Length: 216
Image (cartoon, rainbow, N blue to C red; front, side):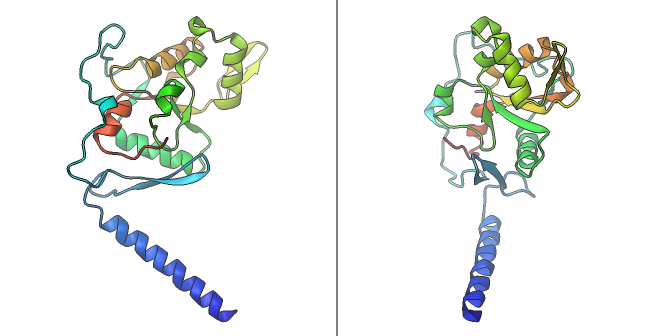
C-alpha cells in the first residue's frame, strides 16, 4: 500500500515537472511572459498555445485576401458605441476566466455550424448569427429562450431585465465577416447593455494566422 502511494506521488511529481519543462521549452510563446493557457472545452481540458513549427502556414480556408463586398466588407474598429473591441490576449483572458468558473462570461462563436466543423476557439460555444436574427426566421420565443437560457437575462412582464446579464465575447471569421457583428447589432436592438458586449474583430483568421490552438 505504501509502495503504491509512493509510486503515485512520484508519478504526479514527474507529470508536474514534465509540464513545467514542456511550457518552458516552447519557443513560440503567446507573449514573452505567457507560453500557453489551459481552458475547458466540452468538459475536457485544452491547452491553447501557438504552433511551434516556424514553417507553419495558415490553412487555405483563411488564406484568401479578397472576397466580394458586399457582403464581405471590412468592419470598422469600433462596431458600435460602448462595445469594446478586443485582441487575442484579451480573448485568452476571458477564456481563462470563464474556464476557471466565472459564470458571468460567455465566449460565443457566431458562425454557422458548417464553419464550426472546420475548427473553433477552445472554450467557446456556438450560437449562430441566424438564431438571433428575426430576418432569418428566429422567432421572439426562440430569442427569448436563448436570452434566458444562455445569457443570464430575465424576463419580467414581457420585458428583458439585463441586471444579471453575462458579458458576451463574440467572434466569427475575421474583420470582413458579418456574423458576429450581426449578433451584436441584434443584441443591441433587444436592449442588451453595450458594455457587456465584447467583439474579437480578428476572429478565426487572425487566430489561425498566429498559429493558436483550435478544436473541432
